[in-house]
Length: 197
Ligand SMILES: [Mg+2]
Ligand SMILES: [Zn+2]
Image 1 (cartoon, protein in one colour):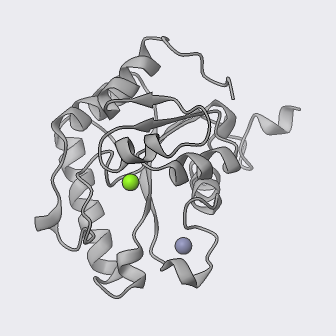
Image 2: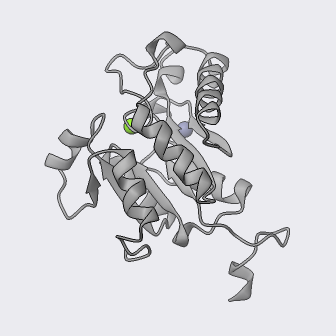
């Protein structure tokens, strides 16, 4: 099916690494990340992002920020936090193609809040991604569910953020790594076969 191999504009589809933000790249906050002062970046995550860039993987962030929908910060403020985070990632040698954010509260019934797949499909369409060859890493089972529902070929949980607690309540087998760094190491060294789902 050749038409699956290119985007609508004829670009070849690319395998990418889709990353959750809170609990994967920065520390999770029980009371939400409301300002840059709440952002604490994991050093190992910065290194992992630099390694992904060196290896040629396009990276995008896919993040639920219901704090916006709950009125705890504005959409502009949330975007500003994302922008500053991307700046820090790029200064450390990484690259982020774009940040896809669901700003809605859970009761708004949107299609982009993970575990729904809409945010990932939006990223795939805009960035021209081959989702079956792509990777999604999150610290919540809902991240992995969103990836699987969207057709992402390889999903993994990290134990940072909410991940350790999420691992304990997993109903079935889940790929788990201690950190984003460990997950990226496994990915780049071919320790794991992608597209095994
Ligand atoms: Mg998270
Ligand atoms: Zn949404």
